[in-house]
Length: 139
Image (tube, rainbow, N blue to C red; front, side):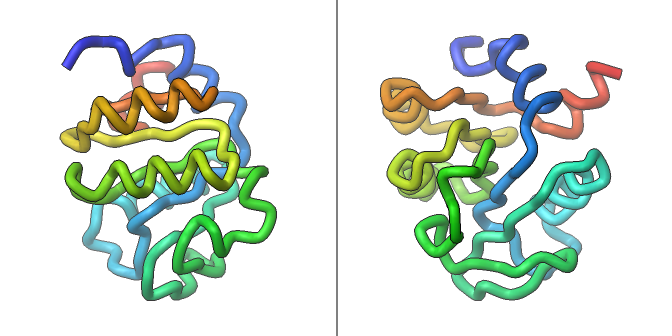
């Protein structure tokens, strides 16, 4: 993968200026990477929104079965897509549909076609990068 979806200015802006992160795939299992990432963003002052078919409360936040179920979804700054790459495109398309401002696909979640669709729709895109690592690199 090229650095096309790892623009350092975009990464910096999303980490520093975003307020609300929806985490697709965030369930109540603390052994999952998405749980750690959501907890980190919350510790950094971000509002987190769990999005998981089970729609359970996670880290004290109400969960939703889909992005479409999130009230005021257009206020989501970043959608973290913590699904296997073969399922990431559907989550990216849903982020586009609800009017999210950006999508972040973490390490090893690569779907260049979905990333291009998001970018064409006006969303910022980060792919194959870890928010925790990128945060640490900026401190």
